[in-house]
Length: 156
Image 1: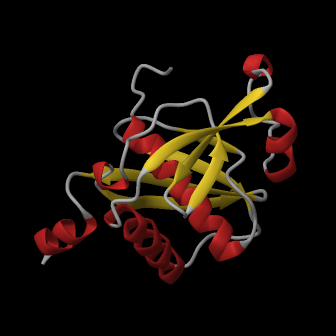
Image 2: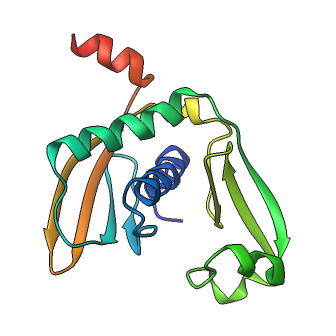
Protein backbone atom coordinates (compact mmCIF):
# COMPACT_ATOMS: atom_id res chain seq x y z
CA UNK A 1 0.00 0.00 0.00
CA UNK A 2 1.24 3.52 -0.72
CA UNK A 3 2.60 5.50 2.23
CA UNK A 4 -0.35 7.94 2.19
CA UNK A 5 -3.06 5.27 1.65
CA UNK A 6 -6.47 6.30 2.95
CA UNK A 7 -9.49 3.92 3.02
CA UNK A 8 -11.81 6.97 2.90
CA UNK A 9 -10.25 8.14 -0.35
CA UNK A 10 -10.31 4.65 -1.82
CA UNK A 11 -14.01 4.24 -1.05
CA UNK A 12 -14.74 7.71 -2.46
CA UNK A 13 -13.00 6.61 -5.67
CA UNK A 14 -15.43 3.68 -5.96
CA UNK A 15 -18.39 6.06 -5.60
CA UNK A 16 -16.89 8.55 -8.09
CA UNK A 17 -16.38 5.75 -10.62
CA UNK A 18 -19.96 4.53 -10.35
CA UNK A 19 -21.23 8.12 -10.59
CA UNK A 20 -19.21 8.61 -13.79
CA UNK A 21 -20.56 5.32 -15.21
CA UNK A 22 -24.14 6.35 -14.46
CA UNK A 23 -23.77 9.91 -15.76
CA UNK A 24 -21.69 9.29 -18.88
CA UNK A 25 -21.72 5.53 -19.54
CA UNK A 26 -17.97 5.55 -20.33
CA UNK A 27 -16.67 3.04 -17.82
CA UNK A 28 -14.64 3.28 -14.65
CA UNK A 29 -11.29 5.07 -14.41
CA UNK A 30 -8.47 3.29 -16.19
CA UNK A 31 -5.83 4.87 -13.96
CA UNK A 32 -5.83 6.53 -10.56
CA UNK A 33 -3.52 7.83 -7.88
CA UNK A 34 -5.06 7.90 -4.42
CA UNK A 35 -3.50 9.74 -1.48
CA UNK A 36 -4.78 11.15 1.79
CA UNK A 37 -4.60 14.85 0.79
CA UNK A 38 -5.74 14.68 -2.82
CA UNK A 39 -6.31 12.09 -5.51
CA UNK A 40 -6.91 11.78 -9.23
CA UNK A 41 -8.75 9.47 -11.60
CA UNK A 42 -8.28 9.26 -15.37
CA UNK A 43 -11.11 8.35 -17.74
CA UNK A 44 -11.27 7.71 -21.47
CA UNK A 45 -13.31 10.72 -22.59
CA UNK A 46 -13.73 13.14 -25.47
CA UNK A 47 -13.72 16.50 -23.65
CA UNK A 48 -13.39 18.31 -20.35
CA UNK A 49 -16.35 18.58 -17.99
CA UNK A 50 -18.58 21.63 -17.74
CA UNK A 51 -19.08 23.47 -14.46
CA UNK A 52 -22.62 22.05 -14.26
CA UNK A 53 -21.32 18.51 -14.76
CA UNK A 54 -18.69 18.99 -12.06
CA UNK A 55 -21.39 20.21 -9.65
CA UNK A 56 -23.63 17.26 -10.57
CA UNK A 57 -20.81 14.75 -9.96
CA UNK A 58 -20.02 16.28 -6.55
CA UNK A 59 -23.70 16.26 -5.65
CA UNK A 60 -24.11 12.64 -6.76
CA UNK A 61 -21.07 11.41 -4.83
CA UNK A 62 -22.04 13.34 -1.70
CA UNK A 63 -25.60 12.00 -1.83
CA UNK A 64 -24.22 8.46 -1.58
CA UNK A 65 -21.83 9.49 1.20
CA UNK A 66 -24.63 11.00 3.31
CA UNK A 67 -26.79 7.87 2.91
CA UNK A 68 -24.52 6.16 5.43
CA UNK A 69 -24.47 3.14 3.11
CA UNK A 70 -22.65 0.06 4.34
CA UNK A 71 -19.41 -0.87 2.60
CA UNK A 72 -18.78 -4.61 2.66
CA UNK A 73 -17.11 -7.46 0.83
CA UNK A 74 -18.42 -10.57 -0.85
CA UNK A 75 -16.39 -13.34 -2.44
CA UNK A 76 -17.23 -14.94 -5.79
CA UNK A 77 -15.58 -17.67 -7.76
CA UNK A 78 -13.47 -16.32 -10.62
CA UNK A 79 -15.91 -17.92 -13.06
CA UNK A 80 -18.92 -16.09 -11.59
CA UNK A 81 -17.04 -12.81 -11.08
CA UNK A 82 -15.87 -12.59 -14.69
CA UNK A 83 -19.49 -12.81 -15.86
CA UNK A 84 -20.29 -9.44 -14.25
CA UNK A 85 -16.94 -7.70 -13.74
CA UNK A 86 -13.78 -6.77 -15.63
CA UNK A 87 -11.00 -8.59 -13.79
CA UNK A 88 -8.14 -7.29 -15.95
CA UNK A 89 -6.77 -4.88 -13.32
CA UNK A 90 -6.58 -7.43 -10.51
CA UNK A 91 -3.11 -8.77 -9.64
CA UNK A 92 -2.25 -12.17 -11.15
CA UNK A 93 -1.90 -13.75 -7.72
CA UNK A 94 -5.55 -12.95 -6.84
CA UNK A 95 -6.54 -16.60 -7.25
CA UNK A 96 -9.93 -18.19 -7.80
CA UNK A 97 -11.85 -16.32 -5.08
CA UNK A 98 -12.53 -12.76 -6.16
CA UNK A 99 -13.28 -10.10 -3.55
CA UNK A 100 -16.10 -7.78 -4.55
CA UNK A 101 -16.48 -4.54 -2.62
CA UNK A 102 -20.06 -3.29 -2.41
CA UNK A 103 -21.07 0.24 -1.51
CA UNK A 104 -24.67 -0.22 -0.43
CA UNK A 105 -26.73 -0.94 -3.52
CA UNK A 106 -24.86 1.75 -5.47
CA UNK A 107 -21.60 0.12 -6.54
CA UNK A 108 -19.91 -3.26 -6.75
CA UNK A 109 -16.37 -3.75 -7.98
CA UNK A 110 -13.53 -6.28 -7.66
CA UNK A 111 -10.91 -4.79 -5.36
CA UNK A 112 -8.07 -5.77 -3.05
CA UNK A 113 -7.81 -2.43 -1.20
CA UNK A 114 -8.96 -1.19 2.19
CA UNK A 115 -12.27 0.64 2.61
CA UNK A 116 -14.39 2.32 5.25
CA UNK A 117 -17.28 0.42 6.83
CA UNK A 118 -19.86 3.10 6.04
CA UNK A 119 -19.94 5.91 3.49
CA UNK A 120 -20.56 8.48 6.24
CA UNK A 121 -16.91 7.97 7.32
CA UNK A 122 -15.71 9.48 4.01
CA UNK A 123 -16.51 13.13 4.67
CA UNK A 124 -17.34 15.61 1.93
CA UNK A 125 -16.17 14.96 -1.63
CA UNK A 126 -14.89 17.97 -3.59
CA UNK A 127 -13.50 18.14 -7.11
CA UNK A 128 -10.39 20.33 -7.08
CA UNK A 129 -9.98 20.52 -10.86
CA UNK A 130 -10.43 18.69 -14.12
CA UNK A 131 -8.41 18.60 -17.29
CA UNK A 132 -8.64 17.04 -20.71
CA UNK A 133 -5.77 16.02 -22.96
CA UNK A 134 -5.46 13.50 -25.80
CA UNK A 135 -8.58 11.49 -24.97
CA UNK A 136 -8.04 11.49 -21.21
CA UNK A 137 -10.21 13.31 -18.69
CA UNK A 138 -8.47 13.75 -15.35
CA UNK A 139 -10.51 14.51 -12.24
CA UNK A 140 -8.59 15.71 -9.17
CA UNK A 141 -10.45 15.54 -5.86
CA UNK A 142 -10.10 15.79 -2.10
CA UNK A 143 -12.11 14.95 0.97
CA UNK A 144 -13.16 17.49 3.57
CA UNK A 145 -14.07 16.60 7.16
CA UNK A 146 -17.74 16.26 7.98
CA UNK A 147 -20.71 15.44 5.79
CA UNK A 148 -21.68 17.27 2.62
CA UNK A 149 -24.50 19.01 4.46
CA UNK A 150 -22.21 20.30 7.24
CA UNK A 151 -19.63 21.50 4.68
CA UNK A 152 -22.32 23.44 2.82
CA UNK A 153 -23.44 25.02 6.10
CA UNK A 154 -19.83 26.04 6.85
CA UNK A 155 -19.50 27.70 3.43
CA UNK A 156 -22.70 29.75 3.94
